[in-house]
Amino acid sequence: MLLSKEYVGYLAREVTKKLIAAETIETKAVATVTEKVHATILEELSLEDRINDEVRVILEAYSEEMNRSGANYQEMFRKVKSELVRKYKAVL
Image (tube, rainbow, N blue to C red; front, side, top):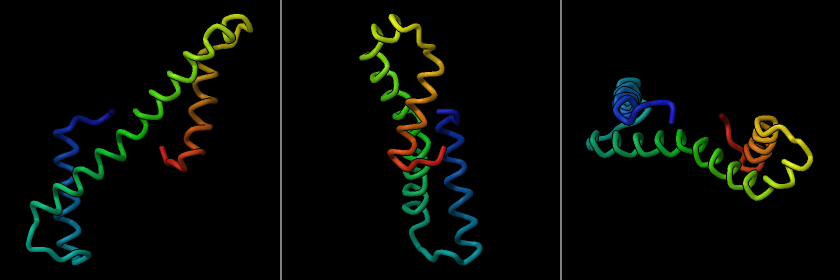
């Protein structure tokens, strides 16, 4: 993940404050809302990590074939990753 967990916590607190200040949400349980925002942000940010892990598993299964054909690992990584991003309808 590109951001530290501490920074994600800061972002969650700031997003919650701004939503309450803009009267977009109304709550008496600010801590609970902040926790849920934090969990949601972490989940979204870890999506790319999970996709990257899945790409590595896929490419590992085809490593011998890629070596025989002389395929470029980085190029194949990008292609497989873009396919998975489309499959999961993710925005990275």
